[in-house]
Amino acid sequence: MYINFWYPIAQSENVVKYEPYQTQVLGQQLVAFRDSKGKAHVLSDVCIHRGGALGKGWVRENSVVCPYHGWQFGGDGKCNKIPTVETKKIPNRAKVDSYPVQEKYGIVFAFLGDLPEKQRPPLRPVNEWGRKGWRANDKVVEFEVNAYYERSIENGLDPSHNEFVHPAQGSPILQDAFKQKPLDMQDSRWGSEFLVRFDNKMTETRALNDEAQAVDEVTAGSGFVGPNQMITWISFSKKQRFTQYFYEAPIDKNRTRIFFVNMRNFMLAPENDGRLVKVNLSIAKEDIDILEALDPVGTPNSTAEELLVPSDAAVMSYRKYLQSWRDKGWYIDTDTISTERHNRTFAIPSPDRRKSKGWVLNAVPLLPPTKKGKKKSKKKSKKKRKAA
Image 1 (cartoon, helix red, strand yellow):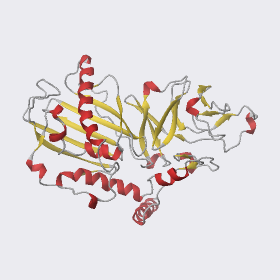
Image 2: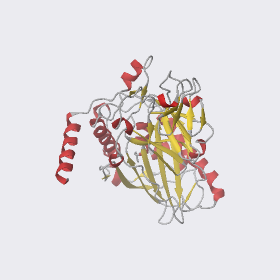
Image 3: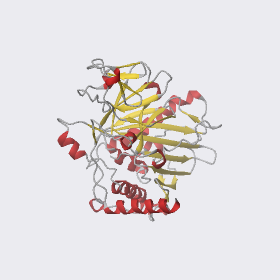
Image 4: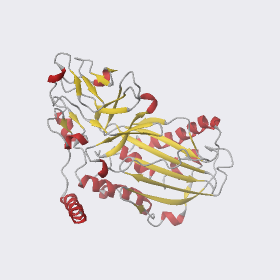
């Protein structure tokens, strides 16, 4: 699991002014709440006094209150009230990590890492959101999977599994031209994407029993931004298309929470929303049944431990990017956390840790950057100095 990316925290409707919302992402406890102006905040969910869970407390005066001794923490993570200490004497170390937030598409996102704003990877935008002729389901679809999130993303990037896993989609068959040669991956700084064509084999089981599925050929593709954001395009024709966005939150090494935004430019009537949600979830269930039985649970450490073929090009591209972020030293050392968790707590480092010292909570341990990652960082620094 990686720091320094945007992760979905909660559906907007679940983050309210009158009580905190608890969740777990990247193996760490987080709390979200709104201030009196409606702005959402996300903090580390551990009081630095005696380890109380802030998310078990309440919201008062634009702050979340620890239920153990009443310490109050504002949206910036700083403690602004200690009942047994005068306000003027609150220690500088009385603070918890507060994370940058974006609220879009009915989801509260947090940047879980310490990079300055200009250096942060992007949140993948839903380009169709608010555009005429496009509609999202009336609410975000959220569900959990007992599988590691990298496996989930790889599944979405795999065009050859549909024929065998998805009778609810009509078991679309990847055309021969795309089976025998590597996929044409279009790379960008933070991810990659591809398009392929399927023969739309019709079966007795259909997800959509209408003209949208009654075509001989379907163009589809997938892409990713960062380790946990995926997009899928499905074009039934020039005029009928789904664009699907999956924002995934690794709860821990074995569980994943997925926030799904489905955009469509046909069947626009609101009464179709419920039907399409059922379709989406029936197709997701087919994937989940496979994902939850994968062995090993996590992604293999080496491609030598699997036998990959040309149609796995998107999976190989994804792993290449993952390795580049591991090289930067962004990968959480979960083994050390597991060993020390009994009497030590951790927090994902926030951007404020680069500006101030004196933090009580330990930053999550990270695997050290590789020599390759360090060299790339030095090259970027030299380019910046020359430009200056």
